Length: 285
Image: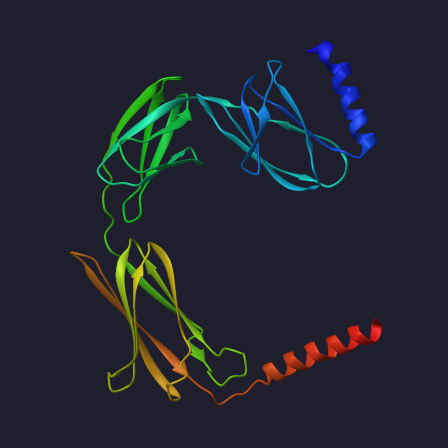
């Protein structure tokens, strides 16, 4: 390695003087290097690769090699000179997953490894004793500690338990004013689901009549539905959300108030400020 250092320093000095952006990658010999997803070369037998970038900017550097966990890092190149990446690859084994549900996302102690769509797929996982977590929408995650053999296929069988349907609703803002002043002209219904479900969203008046209705496919987590209230008179209304799956159904209600009594002049003030700024810029130039 030492005999290459004078040549390396000479290359770097020449690049700086020439105004070049030099990227030096240290990694496993014969690993492949990608910049922003594009293959740019292979690390040589000494464990390094020298690359001249075309310009400054932010670059995503990915290093891959068979039977190793891929390395990925971002680097910001702001001026000509030398930029070094130490891509320490971890030895890996291949994992095949037998599961009662697909697709399944796989994590190794917080690190995202990828998604398995069927038993045909395999993923590289760190070799050694590792705790793997398996996740699928609508199912409880499962964590399993396994001993992964390097450079060989490892098989695991998991059974993910389906979550019970849970539903919650938040209205923000609870009082809004669809009067066209650009301030609180709309309200948002934040709908939480523990797992994917069909959603129906209704706004009902004080006589129990539906004045607004939406249907959608709800995803696990937070779903947002916006109501502009334009066809509603001032007053109190009930928001009713119903979530249903093949064998479960839940419903929840919250109050929302339509009140156009206060006009903020936010729109006029905003437009006036923008026009004043435009006039100022014209005068300055």
